[in-house]
Image (cartoon, rainbow, N blue to C red):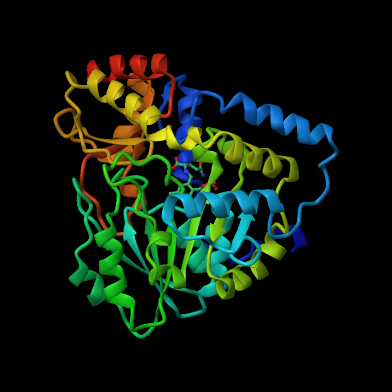
Length: 386
Ligand code: PMP
Ligand code: GLN
């Protein structure tokens, strides 16, 4: 047997290509309007692009410090204080990462040991489970039910065991488009306060929240934030998912552990992009303050255009995703329906069941409305023909 014919035993045998890649490829192949993978079809602020070019021109082209450039960590600290009344230490509690994906992976790798249990709420974002599996952890999933996807705190308490090490929270929530209230964090705190359980709070849509009360961050909870890692991403906030710059905020001892992983995963993140984002946060805070209104207008336009369709649109409290119930249109399961919709109707969407471990027999699809108005109108026109 030649060496090249060895096939390694997979550490993630059940894992295939992500649904986002699959659906975007299918959309390309069938020239469908792509409302599947979550990314805007418009550019981010011009100022940000200019500052990137400026910093490249100024020679900021070598390694950034491992934890992130100082101006960006300072700007994140100030933003956190202004929004959540908590000033993290920019030197010991903030780490800039290669997108939120790296922050999530580093946090899980740093904290989850073999045999540890990690509670998460399904439908859940697809990057959590593989990271937990690679650390030898065990996912304990609680499936939430549409249309409100609320947590039953008794069920949650029943899932806690002496092996529970971490809870993964995501608000505003992808894919359900629901948000947590402060009362949810209070309930979480009551359930775990006596135990050594850490909270990984994925808040990448923190600036795309339509709730009257605004975004409830784990960082605004004085007790929980002492054992939480909050993760965010500038890709969502500044409409440039391809820049892959994110960050996490965590108490110094947790940040120290996370940085040990980050140091050997990526070491550091794109220098000129970090400097450009720092300028943007400082000079144009209105950008993220205005983001809810910016996306609310798109959400309402798209929902309005779908009013006469046979799709039933679920409430959308945050993120740039809408859920649509297609049970009046088709008996197909959600994966088959999304394939059919892409090929035959020319609109690509994401099925919800792929975010769940247990059976999720609802007829729900996710539509991304981070698109130009012309794109949304064209998609709605096709969907109204269903
Ligand atoms: N978490 C959630 C809930 C997301 O939706 C995404 C990406 N859309 C990420 C994490 C990853 O963010 P990034 O692109 O910054 O890695
Ligand atoms: N997070 C994006 C979404 O939910 C996709 C990210 C990716 O393609 N990995 O659509």
